[in-house]
Length: 298
Image 1 (cartoon, rainbow, N blue to C red):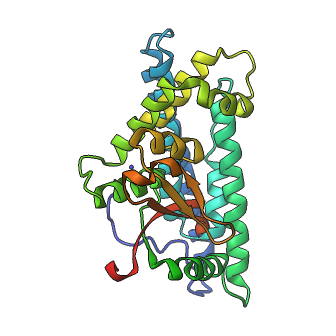
Image 2: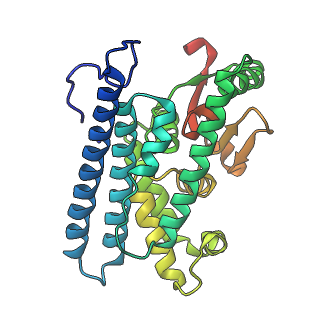
Image 3: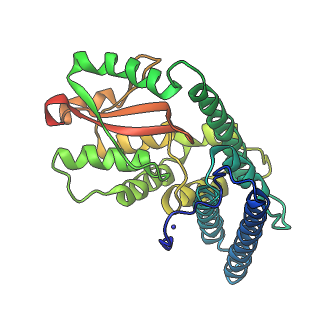
């Protein structure tokens, strides 16, 4: 997801000229939106051709291709919103850039779309809060989280918000305890492999989330694991559980509004717990994980 650096785009700002300039800027915005639509359509067309070349029987590869497209679309839409240059235009641009692919959406795409809609609503609420006189939701949450972490001697170590934040946070924790061979991609693969080898432990949760009752359980597991392993889809409690058991390490998740969530307490004799911070309002996109480090290390 590289962008040419042609300098800052100032076309979205109104500097107060009264000589017809606002109309020219509006035309520039419309031209930019048209370019964005064409770029998205080209990406979808190329992805469709790539998926067409994959055998229908290879469901895992086709699911990975879908996940790759969705990740590329999210990155493109974020870049397009940044090019438009305002927070209000970002949500509108994301809506305008939604071009129909002409195929029936999968259940994973439906879940992803629902999550993205919820994230946009959270982003709007955060923007509204920021526009008011009081502190933002992020500031309030960080203050409350700091009050939770300070007695434990822990502080937030910031992790990139790129869809891999859970896996990057856990890799950072594991590397700090000597397991330097594990990066975020290895954590993704480890989680997927554990779920594949213990399907009955995870199937009830996947079936509860599934909107397609006709999908065989083994295919549901296969598609889910392909997404975990090969995409930038966000991770959550299922993946934390899988990694805790696979690595045989206890994982403690700290948040501002709830008691610490401990997964794999039985593994605490194997080494110190892996500490994560869970945020609801850290970024405009919503939920996020950070790694936690001793306060003295900051």
